[in-house]
Length: 401
Image 1 (cartoon, rainbow, N blue to C red):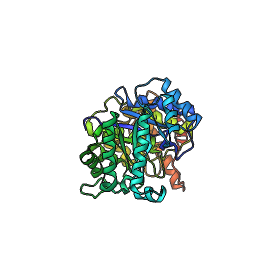
Image 2: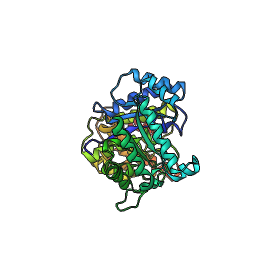
Image 3: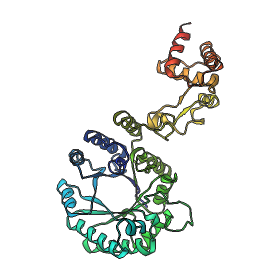
Image 4: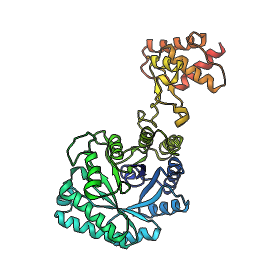
């Protein structure tokens, strides 16, 4: 599609698998999402629960900021009381759960397909009657009978949209991560087939299609990108990929997927990704796995001497992009038994750069002395990485020698 963008569910799906955020934390993260998405609203929407007083307070506080983006939406239970609740808050769009696989229809709800379809259409009509735009969450679509249930239901929703004049979105939810991106894969697991089918067999326009994926089989990001490429305007994500079981599609991953596809960022402020990661880790107690792309402690850190040697000659050799300017994360070296003299030299020169001093070569006496001390540590049986604090101490010692 001409317009592709990201929507966020960090406060809904992202909170279902972790300790809940405080109201203040949600407001701060919402501000960071606004900055990350930029003036063009690349983070187009975010969704909140509306059940608790804390959630409603967070919605009110965020709405007081009067940002155009991300638009605040909700996810509610299918009853009129909840419709009235979110309408009174001032929200214009709400998500409604409409599970579409036989696992859910038969085994969870104990309904027939016709009973489920009639129930869902009644709920969506009630949402419209309450003055809200419905976003229908087609839960478990990758295990649903696509032509037997999904297409007839989507067609009925599009008919209802035409009759009412209210746009109805469809969120295709790969609830268990079964979706696959491979050309020629069969429905219901084919991501491209789902998006194509919604467009061509149910006349759902791109701007009304949103993909929501999970990472159970490590396909969260590639499936979301496939959804974009085959016609979905929106991909639904969470910050840091925090979500049920193995997590959701990370917002930050799709920021860089967008840049890869379009060749520009369309106003997104990528440096904010680092602020988000630091805030969530430091203020909410969430531990980011160190190898996590773009946000983990080790994502642009090397311990191999041959890599450090290459980075001394040209950082582009072993750094994925200019991480310092794009993410405010300069490449780093951690010193251990494989770092060699090149790794020590790289660490020393990073330290000297922070002091406003000139770089040293691998042959400099200070570098050689530190390198010998490092190797002596491991020759004597050390098995742990040498900390920055230890290196700082030795650097000061050898610098004065």
